Length: 327
Ligand code: RRO
Image (cartoon, rainbow, N blue to C red):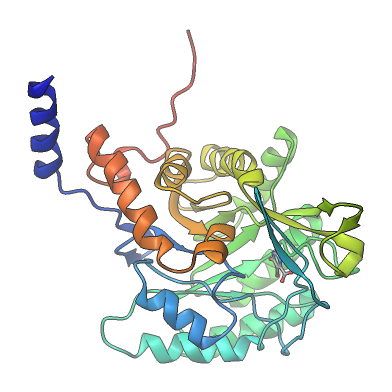
């Protein structure tokens, strides 16, 4: 027993465990970051993530004009996760664009993700053309999966519209672009969605946004006001769905398109599972909202401990190497 313990200590000390990663040509000291919507509405919140152990941040999805969003209460933490119908409140994409450009010009800055979407395809193109013309050199995430704007379906559930938007986008947009996807629930839909995304020079897909239009009830009432209580579900509820989407796209997408894993991450073990399924970067949403930015220290430490125990030094040592049962 003593010998085994001694061996473990040596093994841990000898290993140089790193959670550094790359998305496209961008490097990150840590694979963990916030998920869009959490800790990213204002420059002050973004600065907190920037100063934390997170490897990057993504901004709140910005629209052409600032929006107040849906009436409150519109976000509620529940024991196994969260429900929200924020309704895309944001300060307008230029507020976030200005901030990422400001940081980009500072020494020792991290690389960032600017999240955007228009309320119509025309608005999306207006935004992306302005981003294209700007001095911003970082990554852009096009949110194709907001579940909460009344009357506006989640774009990425409509493969024809998605194809049309991306075809148009890539006629003028040459900066590094990825898409935020809703969860898919059918193998045929994984096949169809991957066939769409494989046609384009995307740098990444981010799986998954919240599971749209759940309903949480306390006593005899819904808990959020908009849409009579229907809202996007995050947290523990969605981890198996998120992992399935990460792995399904890891199996189907061309290797140039990397996967960002989002959904149900609140521990090092959860992050490990996302990477095992193929994620190059892992985002924390509901758990970050519940715990604050110190969560990045805790999850990083837990992930490194798991890696050390297994003898893994880098994410490449186990990324995508999920074991199947084939006996
Ligand atoms: O603002 C929201 O209601 C919202 C957005 Br844009 C999103 O992409 N996902 C989500 O759960 N909420």
